[in-house]
Amino acid sequence: MMIKSNLAILMAGKKIRSLNELSRQTGVSAPALGRLYDGTNVRIDYSTIEALCLFFDCQIGDLLEYVKD
Image 1 (spheres, rainbow, N blue to C red):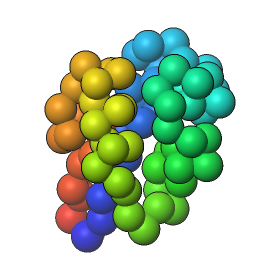
Image 2: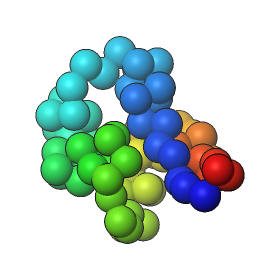
Image 3: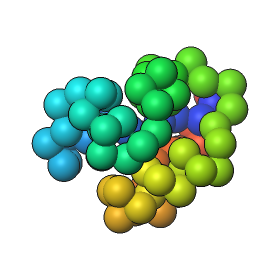
């Protein structure tokens, strides 16, 4: 079981080309976005989820997806 991030898909939909650009627009640190983007994060702050959902105008389920093995 794992949690999959759809950050790359959401970024492509808004034509965001880099994590640094997304960081500038959301206020979320680039390292935190990088971990979420590549799936290496162990935890994620509510403030990060809130900022990304607000920016992408999406729900948590659009950003993160539970995938069974």
